[in-house]
Image (cartoon, rainbow, N blue to C red; front, side, top):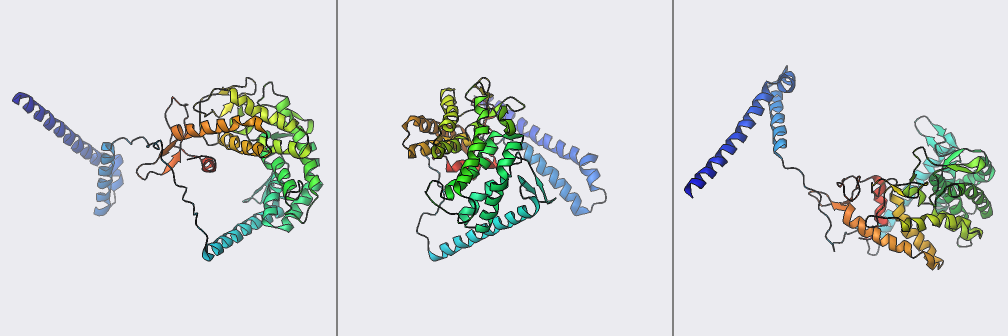
Length: 407
């Protein structure tokens, strides 16, 4: 027994002695290495030399630091506080929010005036060169995408300018332009036209526009554009649409990698469903909802899906799962489209809510963790799928997920 204790004590002593020796060796070696100290300390005073030696010591301490732990998961029943103020606002709060509203309107007006001066009719303004740039197909995306915001803000001059440009130019642009991305064109241009139709009193729900074209103008242009975009669905051999459309001859083709983004093909349905509702033509809704019906049949990981899908095979490609780019709005539209169709009492799509609930449980179980040591909740990624390692990276796009998630 004594022999074992002596052996144990000797082992511990030798271990500590070796660690101490290594530390001395590293510090001595570092102080004699020209690339670390001699080169740095030439011409330095005593204080600077001391700082170099201290830095070497700090680096050595970092070598002895334990490997970081994996971020902790949320417990099964743990709730995350939203931090939102839920009490009754007082006069001070009301004035504060009114001031913020004014600031937002001023920022919007400033941006519009710069765009109108240097890039009117182009998709985007390049602020440094003060030139216009058609990065989204040349349909004047900023004009159309800004119109509904201007209506909500009550900026009648902007509404008049944007509406007049759309009425005079957009149909011609649509008939002459080449390649556009199905997703970007749907959410910005088609969505902008449909919002303008609704907000200007098209479906007699509200009317926030006292200036600009009649609502029917926006609807007719929206139908013309959507008819061309439908070729992305009808040209594909599966319910998954191609990613790109040649507007001038209503043809479509896949992207250069032959794949479609999961989020892109599932972020079209709100617009296409609404267009069917107001036009009376079911073809837009029919094609759009085929995507979700198809996704329902595909294998998933606790409701989560990879970020790429093939329009040729109809199958998911790869294993990468994330709520960032190419994955984000798939989950967002599950619940939004369900709410949209529930509002018109269409009971054939209750499966969307089931898919949403399963996905949110999967997000909580596989993607939501906490930082160390402050325990801030974040949503990470699974680059290699559920059997791969967890990546604690959170895109800025994921910030919108918290309006979708149920915690």
